[in-house]
Amino acid sequence: MSATLLVLLVVAVVVAGVVVLRARSRRARPVPEAPRAPLPHVLVTELDERPTLESPAPLSTRLNASRSVFDRVRTLASTTTSVSAEQLDVVEEVLLRSDVGVATTQHVLERLRTDGAPQGIVAALREELLASFVAQRDVTLDADSDRVGVWLFVGVNGVGKTTSIAKLAARFVGEGRHVVLAAGDTFRAAAADQLQAWAERTGADLVRAHEGADPGSVIHDALGRAQARGADLVLADTAGRRANSTNLLDELAKVRRVADRAPGQVLETLMVLDATTGQNALSQAREFLKAAQVSGIILTKLDGTARGGVVVAIERELGIPVKFIGVGEGVEDLIVFEPEAFVDSLLAS
Ligand SMILES: Nc1nc2c(ncn2[C@@H]2O[C@H](COP(=O)(O)OP(=O)(O)OP(=O)(O)O)[C@@H](O)[C@H]2O)c(=O)[nH]1
Ligand SMILES: [Mg+2]
Image (cartoon, rainbow, N blue to C red; front, side):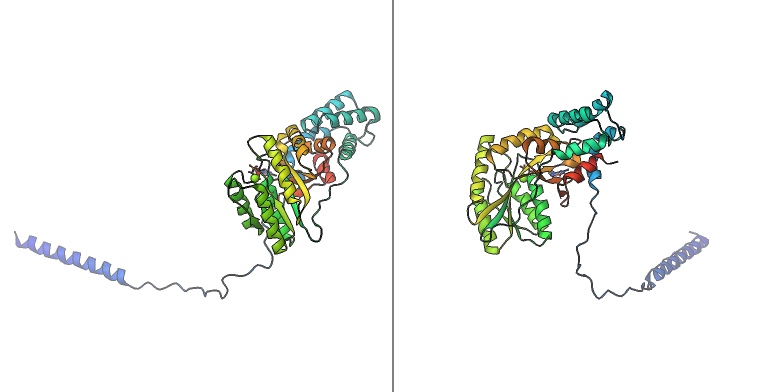
C-alpha cells in the first residue's frame, strides 16, 4: 500500500471520529424544561345543580311523522259554509291514514257535511278531535296513610313497559320521591338486569328475584322493602309474554291481587301500548281489559310513527284515558298527555 493511501485512510478515520463526537455532544446537551402551569388547588368540584344535557324538542317536532299526515288538511280553506266533496275526501283520507279510526272519521265527515265549517276545516276538525277525549286523566300518587302505593305496568312484550318505568322513576326521584322498582318480569333474567341498570341510573331502589321466580313474591318483597324504608311508591314491572296469553292474563290478575293486599294499594294499572302498531294496539288493549282493571294507558313510540291519531281511537273506542305518551328513547322522553297540546301539535300551522 502506498504512503499516500495510508495518509488518506488516517485522515478519513480522524474525520469520521470528529463527526461522531460532535453528534454525541449535541445529543447530550440538556434541553431546557418548558415552564409548568401551577396545579389547581381543587381538582373536583361538586355541582350544585345537575346539568341539563339537552332541552327537549317541542312536541310538534317529536310528532313530526304524524303531523305531516295533516299537511294536506292545513292547506284547506280557512272558512267555508259548505265543504266540497273533494275537501271531504281529503279529510277522510288524512284521518284514516293517521289512524284515528273509522268511527271518529265518520263522525267528523258527518259534522262537516251537515254544519259546514264556518271557522274553517282545521277549526272544525280540532273541535271534533278534542270532543273524542275522555274527561278525566289525573294520576293517583298518594296511597292511604298506612299503605304503600303501587303502579302496575302491563302490556305485551316489547311495547315499552320497562323503559316507561325507568322514565317515570327518573321523574319521581327528581321530584324527591323515594321509589322502589319491582322486577316482576321474571320470565327472563335479562328483564331484571335491564331494570337494575335503570335503578342504578335513576337512583331508585330495586327488588328482583331469580329467573322463573313467582312474580307475586317479587311484588310482595318490594312492598315489604318499601314499607321498611318509608318509600312513597312501588313501580312494578310485569312480564309481556308467557306460554300462552290466557296464562299471562291469569298471572296478571294474581299479581294485582298481591299488589293490592295490605300494605300494598294499587293506585294505577297502566297498560302500555306501542303506537307504531296502530289499530292493532286497540285489539291488544281489549284483551288486557278483560283481565286487568286498567286505569290508564301509556302510549309509547309516538316519535316513530305517522299513526299518532290512534290516541283518539283509543280514547273514543275504549273510554280509557291516555295518561302518558312516549316520544323517544331518552329518560326525559315520557310526557304527561294533554289533549289540547297534542291536537294542536298535529293541526296548528
Ligand atoms: N322511539 C321510542 N322507543 C321506545 C319508546 N319507549 C320504548 N322504546 C323502545 O322500545 C324497546 C322495548 O322497550 P322495553 O321497555 O324493553 O319494552 P318492554 O315492554 O319492557 O318489553 P319486554 O320486557 O320484552 O316485555 C326499547 O328499545 C326501548 O328503547 C318511545 O317512546 N320511543
Ligand atoms: Mg320489559
